[in-house]
Length: 81
Image 1: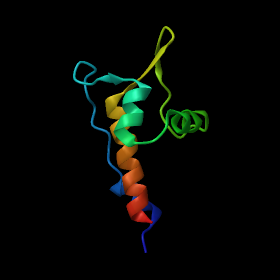
Image 2: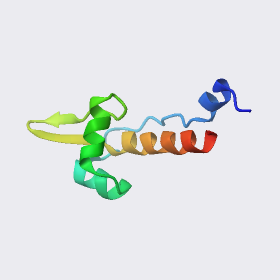
Image 3: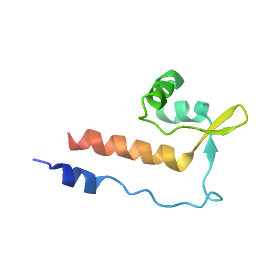
Image 4: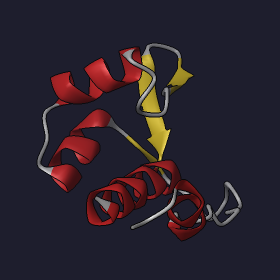
């Protein structure tokens, strides 16, 4: 049986990345990368289950490192069950 502490310790720790080494990606990239729809991601944002975007005027962007961390967390959750 897996304890909550074991699950927490198994989750990846985000590695601090310099903004100069990271990339901003748009929703189109996120949808292509994951194979999921933009509508699904916007619902997750509304529910607080996906990182909020960084706004540049009217444009929304996400840090690629945050997307990758979110995906790693989903992998860990699905394998811990």
